[in-house]
Amino acid sequence: MNATVTGLLPVAPPDPARPDAGLVLASLWHTEGPEQQRKVMSGVMDAWEATRLPAAYLARHCLAGSDGRTVLNFAQWTTSEAHRAFAADPGNQQTLGSAVQALYSAGPPGRYAPHRFTARREGVVRCLTATRHDTEDAGAARSLADELTGRDTAALAEYFYVGEDGRQLLVLAGFEDEPGGDETSFRPFRGLVRPVRQGPPQAMATTRAQEGGASGT
Image 1 (cartoon, rainbow, N blue to C red):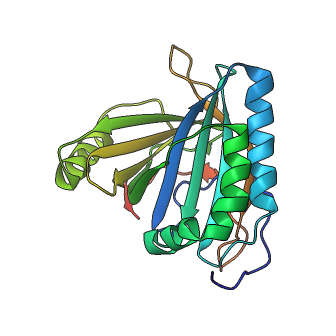
Image 2 (image 1 turned 90 degrees about the horizontal axis):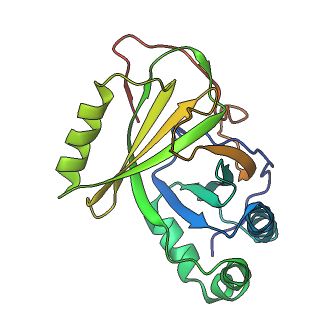
């Protein structure tokens, strides 16, 4: 395993547009209710905080669903290869893997590459929605992301990630308040973050509408 780098910070809100992230891991877990939701999120973050993490690790977050049951897991690494090496390490499988599975029986998370983000209007992002679209290949996923960027939405910002196998597009949309309706939204619960080199992480910070509305990542 790579040498551990100190300096991780307990920052609850994620930075979905973090520039040094080459890999995003995301998954939705469904618990029995608010009590188990909080227990699972606390236990998972406790396990990650107790683990020796390599320099390629950037951030991991648990966000609580507005339905009182769902958990959005969101993690960022520098590269896919670095995460695969970490996950394949028998020591990590025995300690971290076992600790997480004891809390929630979860399959592998979705693996995504950041594609683009769009800041639509000014405001402070306080909650997120997560939508997954099935696609034929990576080209179709990128085309869908570009198409969705041009539609009208109440979101302050949107973040688009293409699945490593090209078969899925993940869209995170940021809102100042819960958007309402039937869609579950997610508020930050706990996170563990390695600060970006130029300074502290500006997690889910104020967005400013940009000319053209989009910036590549």
